[in-house]
Image (cartoon, rainbow, N blue to C red; front, side, top):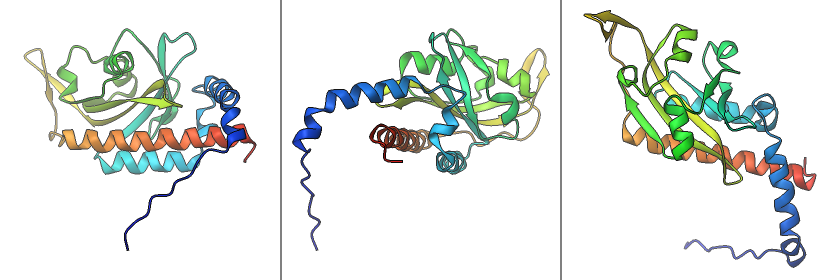
Length: 205
């Protein structure tokens, strides 16, 4: 049987009130903060995130949201064992790969991150771990940038002749195909949150 495309048209009255709905949705999205993000996204989003990180071979991942002055990225969610330490961490928008992605809205995939001078080691120092590989993609809510989503592979390093070298086995790293899967997954997360905001705006809860 050949598939048939549904031809749904907007209700005239709802279409007329679209500006009102758009304004209210924008108001709701502005109210999203690192502190209340999980209450808005819901447990099912957390599970999808964990499945997505596992699918691309990441050890853990984080959602970073822009603060109100848009001077820092703040970790609103982390899937790893150090989540209590990592959530709430602030990264200035002037430093690090995650901040570069927020500024350019261009995704990044990179291996041997610890050798990159653009990588900020601040979070690594707090967790006493070393980021080997990283993927970062922009994170949108209602088509507006709200932060980034990152995932990492971790390792341990030591110093040899003043140079950082791996202390154990080298992780597999990420490939371009992993980034494509990651971007699609983050897009699904954005759509789910958009839908939750629509439900809230319509009182459909």
